[in-house]
Amino acid sequence: MDILDIARKNQQKAWEIIKKINVIPIWEGIGAQINLVGSLRTGLLMKHRDIDFHIYTPSLNLADSFRAMARLAENTSVKKIECVNLLHTIEECIEWHAWYQDSDNTLWQFDMIHIRKGSRYDGYFEKVAERISSVLTDETKRAILQLKNETPESEKIMGIEYYQAVIRDGVRTYAGFEEWRKKHPVAGVLEWMP
Image 1 (cartoon, helix red, strand yellow):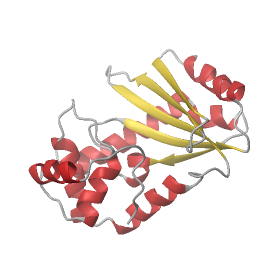
Image 2: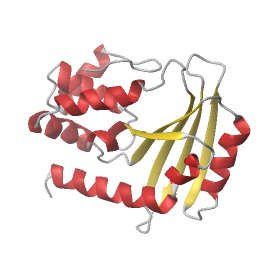
Image 3: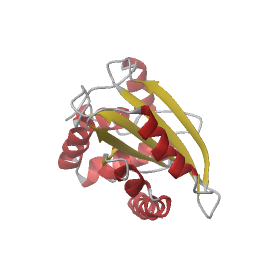
């Protein structure tokens, strides 16, 4: 199957799961604005089946955040949930990670970042996704998807690393990408957009 067809199939499956898990209405139920970011939004979802949402509320109330996640946990296909409290960092957020097991027993990771509206990263990653989408060509899209597809399952690589390497620096092979990563180590949040 062509790499673009695989990506389209992944997109379709991701949206089916989003509807089944009811994630958008659950967060809206606590008065939050929920925005899709990351590889699903840019059409670059490949082997690492993760679905990224940034969720905004005017103030960040831990009880509300936990209430939303408790509702999500009611779905028996949600197999695991993790929470990282970053409220007292520059990120001012709660990181939620949930793993959903689909009918094929494949795990999909939901990364839900609950952010205080008006904080440093309010809207930032939405803008990154828009900019990446606007500069993607068929050739760069195919190159990114191919690199993601060739990445061993054991490697944990942020999507933005692929995008920066391909779009900004012209990387086109996995060997070239490995070299690029050695020269561009990442610590923390990688702030780059085309």
